Length: 147
Image 1 (cartoon, rainbow, N blue to C red):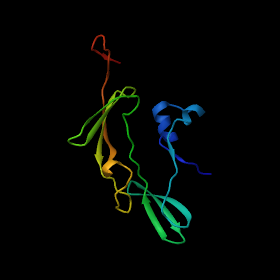
Image 2 (image 1 turned 135 degrees about the vertical axis):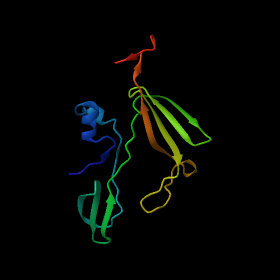
Image 3 (image 1 turned 30 degrees about the horizontal axis):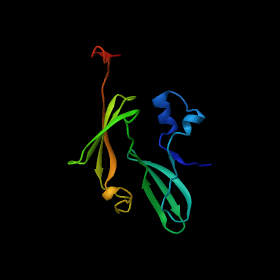
Image 4 (image 1 turned 120 degrees about the vertical axis):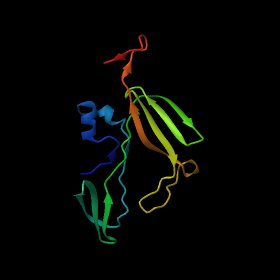
C-alpha cells in the first residue's frame, strides 16, 4: 500500500535524528500526493542508469514513459529565526538557528517536465533553494567557538 510522499524520507530522518519519528512529529511533516501524468498506467518500475534513478511507467494509453527520479533537498532551514532579501537581484536569505546555517533561495521561473512555466507564484517567480552554509556555534557571552 502506498501513501503520500513526505518531505523527509524515513532514511533521511534516520540520518538527521538517529531514529524514527513519533506520531506527533509525523503529523508536522508536509505530505503531498505524487501525481504523474502517465495516462492509464498498469505498471511502475525503478531503474538505475549511470548513477541516476528513473521511474518507468507502462501506460495503456501513452506507452512507456520515463521520469528522472530526482528531488531538490533543501538544507539549513531548521529553526528559522530571520529572513532577509535583496529585491534587486532576487535573492532571499534565511537563518536557521537549529542548523547554524544561512540558506540562500532565489526567485526565478520554474518549469515543469513539459517545459511550461509553473503558475501560482507571484509574477511567476517562485522561491527555489540554491545552497546553505553552516558555521560553528559561538557562545554569545565569550565570542568563542563552542564544540
